[in-house]
Image (tube, rainbow, N blue to C red; front, top):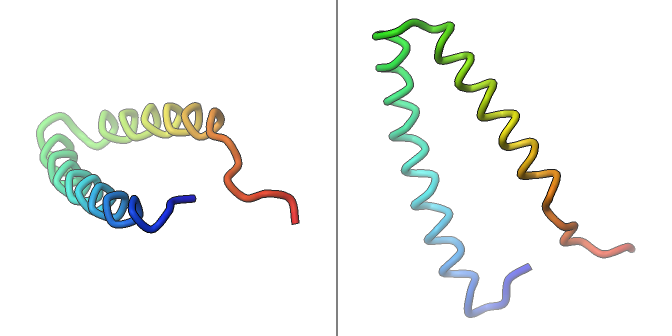
Length: 65
């Protein structure tokens, strides 16, 4: 999927994105405290639908064996 030169850059980018998502998790905890868990669950449901749509458009990276 990635050659030797780009693998380190992809790993660094991935770790940065994961760190931001962990911070966002704390923000969702605060949001649940302020406006309630139902609103946060609704937001998570919406994000799942968006992720499903994004994943649908990805191309397969593994070839036929």
